[in-house]
Image (tube, rainbow, N blue to C red; front, top):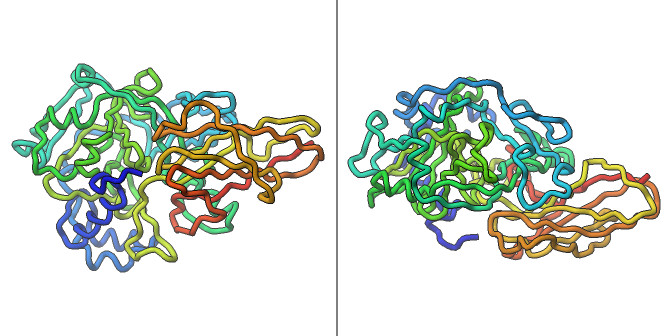
Length: 434
């Protein structure tokens, strides 16, 4: 976990929520009447009276035309690689067996709020505007960059995981018997890739970043998102300028190739250590503001609601500690031979220190062997393996639990939140020995 409070997401969220409630933050929110309607499904009932929510702002009204949509997901989704949930596709963990550190593009998970847009790179432009730039350009007079111009700027790369905040959500129900809403991911809504592009800080400086800037908000070119009949506009989520200048990448390559459409072509954000929704895909414009910014994606969504949480919700920020076996769910394995169990563990707080595995339902635990020199990678995962020699046929439950560099170990149970975020409990993985 980074100790700098100016780039730490939880602290940033607390500051911005306080400012928003006090009427000192703006952005593409929604009219108060719509927030009342939305609050029927969430624990927001006490919030609207204090909000003073602004109407949908100029970004939605004057945004560039939305590119045409081919289908919810463009790339092939063979059933041996993915479990498909409408416009989302979860990676099957058995598809990563014998793979290296990086997830190949053909099996990298897809999280779309709407659908994958098909964008013409020749006509596409990145447009920067707002009061946090010198001269405070408006959207119709924005500073523009073509893809070719971005390629001519100094490049940078990072190996980093992108993980949906709801990864593991389905386990709240299947393992803990609790009802939550949202896509019922198991554990495959994560991927690690090598991203290459230009640092956001470089682009901001070229655009004329002002010393008064406090927030940066990228907006995607995917179709506008509608929830409960309420049009919320294009996906967008603010970052503090300190984080934007620290380690955020505007990526145009993934694993050495141009970004595929489903993963943000022609340009996406990669925001290390922050939840996946922060890494906006298909970036078309960036607002740089001298006043605090908010959006539905950090006020209405991506918050923890439920027993023990504040009425306005707690922030969903860095990811938690998780482990997964590179093994099919309900896999069948032959008895009387030694099997090498492979898996991966990761944490949003830093590298994984060690992993323990139980093959008897949690009665006994053994230390797994790390695979690959990945322990130094701050934003990736740790691969591991351990031998297992079951002698008797029958049903078994495998468990893996990781401890990260901050000393946090996966718990036996995750506290309930109604939107099913940040599941970190040790997962009971069923197998049958035949």
